[in-house]
Amino acid sequence: MSDVDWILHVDLDQFIAAVEIARHPELQGKPVVVGGKGDPAQRGVVATASYEARAFGVHSGMPLRTAQRKCPDAVFLPSDSPAYEEVSERVMAALRELPVVVEVAGWDEAFLGADTEDPEDLARRVRDIVRQRCGLESSVGIGDNKLRAKTATGFAKPGGIHRLTQADWLPVMAHRPPDALWGIGSRTVGKLAELGITTVGELADADRDRLAARFGPTMGPFFRVLAHGWGDREVTATPYVAKSRSRETTFQENLTGREAADAAVRELARRVAHDVIAEGRPVARVAVKVRFAPFVTRTRSTTLPEPLDPAAGASQGRDESRTPKPAPESRRPQSQPDSAELSGPQGVHEGEQEPPVKPERTAVGDALERAALTVLARFDFDRPVRLLGVRAEFAVSPADGGEE
Image (cartoon, rainbow, N blue to C red; front, side, top):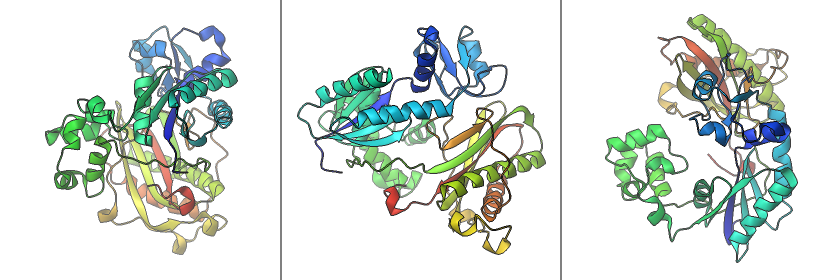
């Protein structure tokens, strides 16, 4: 669906923490931190924090031990992905009762396409139905495309409504730093600053060729598109499809040798292969995440020369002739940022959920293992390792909407 008057972006406020507080009403008004096994004495990261905890500087992705130092009185709880998924499904079902097209974007957010003369009234109805059906608060951004609607949600938080359109985009956004834009992180901000670009307005006025020379022919001009607030207007009710499957584990004691890292990556790759076979979709790229002590995270990836189809190899034993080799160095994409915040069921953090029974060896597992080890070899292991992760990214099909 593309011909709509307005696009609304619904974001559930402090979603994971809110679910836990709803389960434990006695925690209302207290600083709550959710992540790992809920024990700050063990290694793990914050999945989310209540607003009361955020007031102390606690935020997603922070080590649990750091969170405890910042907020000693916080209540720490373990992550419970099935519970969050169940609540998310109830929220999305409630939204579908409204005269809108619902496009699920994750556990805690969705885009709504609507034909209405009063989008603010519709936004109020959205907030009301989420509160009445699920007991959760939400923020709603209103825009004339997805980018502006999602950006508007940031101004609406917590528990509010905000509209942002082409007419007021630059007056509102031009003076803000580039990371105010959806899709631009701190690393890109640093690189833009090297070009003398420190605001959204300066990025909007930047030369396309200069951006392409620094960030590549695709991403460079795309950053300029973001700065203008241009974006997708299509909202589709197609069910949410995960773009990847991943497994990662935080070690209670640092790994200090490459041999130990290799063994851990092999095990993670086989667990990912188990998930990929269950998903039944071809894999196009394999990524490895390494978090070095004290807390420096790097992610690198490789594109397979051809998609790895689990339907062709899931039931087969080890078969070297069918195992794709990773793409050569020249074809490997640059490192990509990663997120420590739980955003949906596509990733599993060992230690937060019990791992499944160790899967049997398969051709898919062999292929992912070989690719992951090749990527791992590109890291310099000059520091101890506290976390490793392996991610398989699915090939894009027309049914997935053609998104990159």
